[in-house]
Length: 58
Image (tube, rainbow, N blue to C red; front, side, top):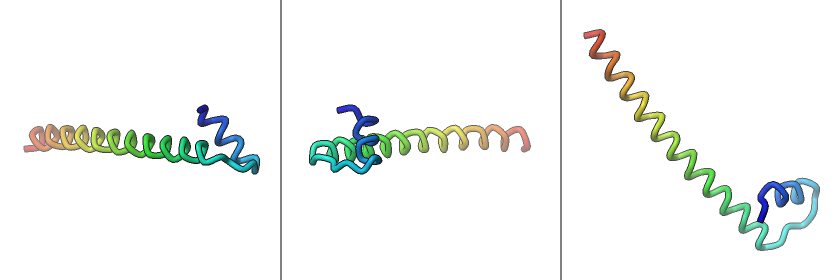
């Protein structure tokens, strides 16, 4: 199912089927997992940068 079409359908006030709602929920879960991964990678990069800056400052 095309998530963009489902979202457009819902935003226009049409009633979504159970399968469309399930597709949206699964898409939301995938997005949250992606955000979690990117956040963890960002924290790791920040820690690495801070570690190197502390070594330079010391």
